[in-house]
Length: 275
Image 1 (cartoon, rainbow, N blue to C red):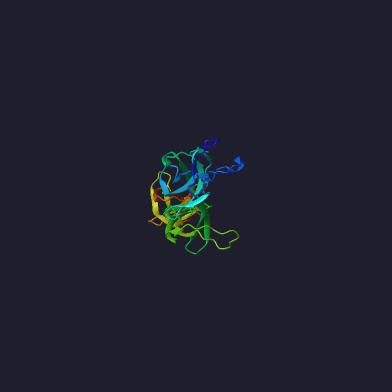
Image 2: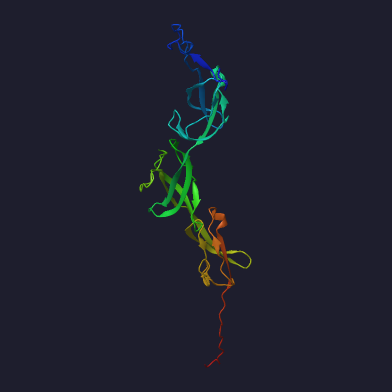
């Protein structure tokens, strides 16, 4: 060992014999040594200490102070890409036993952006969403069976294209988007009913029914006069028409209009018997 306590081993190929000379200055034996090394082991793991790939081994001089130099980005055995987070030590003193020279390197997933284009069946864009997924992983989006657009109109899922993809790195300056899904949705409809009743709640005629997209704000046109099943005319006495937001449950989509008997003047003329 030298003054720094690093270990050296004799080089047997060095010249270690001399012919003794009368001149003391010539009687010098030069002994050659080389670094004695041991293995330093890099263990690659995720944050939960799961092995990512085969350990890497490097040689370093025994007794020296070794500062780890892990890769910033690695690829595991499944092709997923990881980025460096930390090591369990900042430096180690190299020992003869390699099991004492283990450096645990922790990596986290290297993420890329996934674009979800949500469209109706005509191809019109309803909304755009982004998600993150690990480079190299096989990704399929979490699909909402029902969604609302910016106007609160409801749509239901139809199909997704592609079903899944392997997440790729988009090169700098690239114009083509690589990690893109297209999700198709169609409108969800529900029935809205208008009930015609008198002031006591008795039904005057069959309900009028219209089908509208869920989420639509609907104000029916005021029907001033109606005739019941007996042909009797009724007049609307509702002061204002109710506006509703169409719901998926048809029971929540009932609009009531209240009526009273329509009245008209009756003129009675009395005449003498002989006109």
